[in-house]
Length: 361
Image (cartoon, rainbow, N blue to C red; front, top):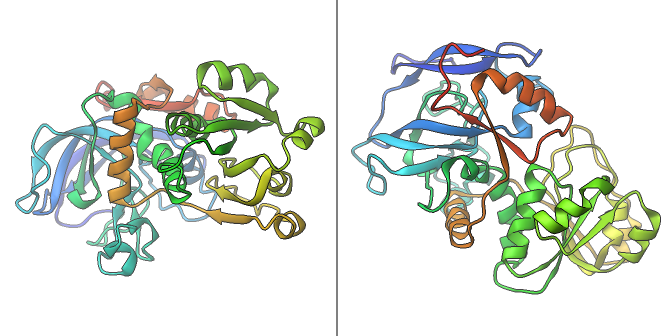
């Protein structure tokens, strides 16, 4: 394992955290030469995910410093390897969470690379050559073409960037629970943040009745009027939670703080499914009685495979689904991370990489 190999000859300007303070500062590093299976991408935009916040502060104890975060990347291809047939110079593309996988296991062969036990991520991972991966808080990226997707022409590159993580994180469990092929289901979205808001947009576009479940009563009007939710339940309101019992077919839980799943399970119909897509840093509570007495299922879901990610982008293009974003420059990353920690964003920060200079910060 090394930050770089002798094949890393391309000097790149980026922004990295150097220690667990989580402070982001300019960082000059090297990327590998464009190989036969690679594409080189001039990065235009990169979203800021809650995972970035965990990594820069080493909340999960796995960060390899210096770390260049960012896995919601959009840009334009500037170089194409000899084995690459499905991308050309000038193509609008995106890179999400995945940088490499074994390519041989049942999951890789079944387009579920995200569940390969040798998966390596776009940043803070170990690439095939032994180097540590660096993400999208940088001006250029070299990526294996098998982990790159096309961005539909009608989607703006800035508002499409968070779809590479937030979008696929919500799309995958919806597809897994047949919400793309059926209509009129009762879908609950827990939490109205970066994940939740795009989940509301998707579920409504797919023809479902959407209920937002939140601890914040102040978000009701925005959920209904701006995002199109049908109903809103304040999870701390006992009466509202009681009225909502056994009304929902599927719940997608996006909350990244410790909480109990018991009250949410009570909102599901018999045989209903609760999918956990948020990643709390402490164990969540799962009482047995709401499971047993409702024949309910709790499952998890993590992003999606590459075929599914391209499908998600195409579906978002068809329905004109994008994320609600706040554009920032590189010298605002630290402020944005602080605000993200306070949930003070509507609903995703996106760094304008293309116009950020290497001296910023």
